[in-house]
Image 1 (tube, rainbow, N blue to C red):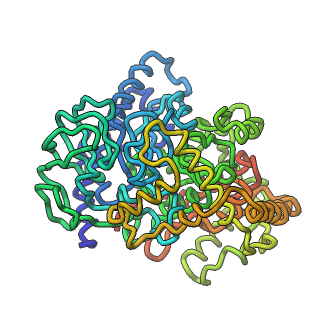
Image 2 (tube, rainbow, N blue to C red):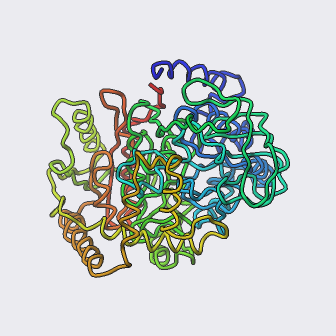
Length: 592
């Protein structure tokens, strides 16, 4: 069956590329091109949002990148179009009217869920927008929807495949977990079916099942207080090409899969910002936001041939984002180009009183005029870049990856950069204690989030989430994917002597490792393949940018990462943009 997907996708995509209304030009649209089209009157935000909604409808059943669309996206697009009509022509507008997809752990105080991919949080209500979403709204961006992700940002279990979560990793959900979308006398048009219902439903016009639509849905009765009753739908895919005319008592139809890499459907999409990367790569969104604790932006960006910026910790607010570790968590853009990523970065950086300690320190490092000024074609000129060859570049001699990176090194030199080769980071590979610290930090952080950031929630602590998973083993795939990390975190008791020792060791490794190397060699950045350096950057709170570098023998993308010391984003942007413009590696996926 898998071999039929390319043909199916070509059929699905055909209308979107040849319908004569300019849609073919929207594929790979950059923010600058979008704004130019707005100014010229050849494009509206509504048409752009409709294009991405069509792309999602066509592609999401295969790649599962979008966990839900914003029911108010078109309303926001219309508002942006009306506002634009009153603005001076050619005024710098940044993200105004541009659709943005958000990772599902980034809170929005609207009709969308914020769940980290878990069924335990479906129907919970956040107290207010996250800090980065507040900034996106002020910039006039259109919130397109929520991107799927590795459940709980890959912090529930080491056994979970990249890109899997209970909400979108199923071909079908049980009737108790359907999303009913239609007219309702309740303020929210989406409820979870286990213990989270409020009010009653009068009529349902549509049922959305993990990205698939089944029209003519209707509920059989009205209930109060116990959630949604079972629904009946006209047709729904069972994941195997069949259909079901009635979802009642169809537990045997549960079908578990992860998100798919659009370049090779059997390849690892990496995570945990899988959906954010896949959706942008597949032109299902203009730009997206991801989050990273260790590798969760850099890795999926590399694996899906897109650009990912992992900012210095504190440069972007984490307020209202489902946490793992305040010490390592950061929010950053995932886009098709460096320029787009920088446009998004400019919109989301800055002080936030709800994340005051981290963002106050960062505020003084944000350059006046923003980061767009560092988009320089000659950005590589004069830069000193360290190649960590022996520790990270372990490709077989003669392989495509090896040849590709050697060619890139030649290009970097030709653009005026100085490459310092065969460098090593002292003590790389030594046990850092990162996991020890993260387990304790996660329990503290998630308990605070669940108890204080949500006005409505069926779970209020990590212990509640563990219990939910145990009570919903089938839906959460507990027989195949355990919750060992949750259990280990629950057994911690704050930051004790063991955790303090781990924190000291990470500070020492950062100081004696990357910081010492960068200072002694007077480097502007280090150069590493894919996301192999993510833990080094993570434990020190350092920034990194992943840019498409090539495609291996099977056509699977891989990236190149430029990393630096805290607050070195201006130099990294110059380097990344210079590299991108000199190489032009990215190409749209073929869904092989």
